Each structure stands twice: as structure tokens, then as C-alpha cells.
Amino acid sequence: MSIELVRYTPDELTDSKLDSLIESKASFQIVNIQHMSSVVEKVEGRIEKAGLSCRVYTEYRSAAMAGSVLGGITAIAGVASAAAIAAHNLATWDPDYELGKNQIKEHLSVVYKKEK
Image (cartoon, rainbow, N blue to C red; front, side, top):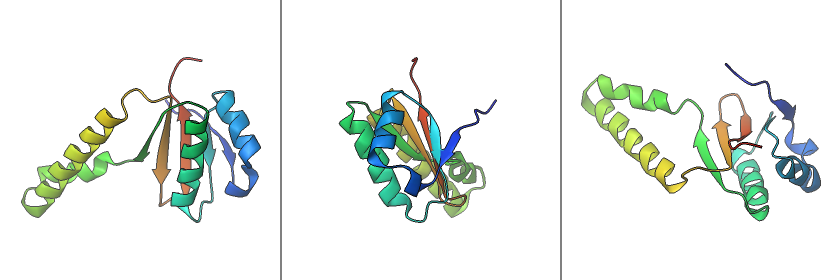
């Protein structure tokens, strides 16, 4: 079951609009992103400024782990990917927000994870 997120472009998300969304613990999506790292930095910074925590990840990252069943160099990459994901999840345990980057579709899903 997927949730339909309200969509914004990077230009529509002023600091005050972003702060308002975070304060209301809203989930949303930023679309048509040309510079993913700067948008992620901005959103992550505003979330942390509000005293909340977040985890940034790449959507569909488990596909990288799927290679581990094929053997050879792909298996090494798949196992390394799984280890990195596990370490990252432990380092950002129980975040308030999850930020899912999707470079191919040029969007960032910002999802509030705790009870409102």
C-alpha cells in the first residue's frame, strides 16, 4: 500500500514553507530535482534545526543486494552493500523522518515515520 504524497518543486519550497511542513509533521515529495545533494542538505538541515532526526537513503537500494545471489564480483558488491545499509540503519535508529532519494526519477520522498 503506497501513500500519495503532496508534491513540490525545489523552487516552491522556501525555508518557511519547509519549516511549516516539518512543524506539522507532514510527509511530502520534492520533484524535478536537478541538484539532489543540495536539496537533501537543505531538507536534512531544516529537519535537524527543528530538533528532529532523519535517515537519508536511496530508494530501491535492496536491488544492489540482489546481486549477491549471482556469485563472483557481483556477490562481493551485494554483500558490501548489505553491510553498509545495516551500518547506516543502526547509526540512524528510529528517525523522525526518512528521506528517500530517487536519482532516476529526480525526486526526494520526505516521510514522517512516528505517530503524530
